[in-house]
Length: 235
Image (cartoon, rainbow, N blue to C red):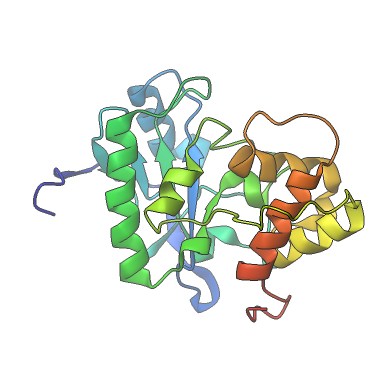
């Protein structure tokens, strides 16, 4: 960890054993939506709130570990990704100190890149396994939100980004959109509006209005390159 700064241990009691022999295959990114770092630390360590994460990254780049990676932190709640639930048991959760209406700082993003690089290598998680809370719980959650730089992570090989052919402009088709969204991993049963909002938060920040050709092209490319069937096999 030379040059990366010390990891600050701040244990949280809000954790337990991973269930059914599951191991981390996802990394879930969150924002704290709290006014400051101390408020976030207090909440993530308070037994009465029953919420935690494995890591919390401060705006100045300091890295706090609250739960050991071998344990099941309580960060994800209800939701499913690629047709499977219990995201807590099959993920590592990272909270970013951000009150939801400001940009993510450069020190914070740089530390996140280092942490993700370590986690993905350690657990052999592919870049498509890095997701946001909104991705698998689109009716309940909106983090890490449209200000988060997913393209930056993708350029570093730490997430994925669509790259459809320039001439690919499929006509809006809700059924086709949801089918492709399901192949990529989204819980299509939640409906077009929340799934579209989750996709746009990642790849078309601040886009508005009804389903558009750009949305169709983006999800089609993600499904084509990273899609799975509901048995979990890559398509």
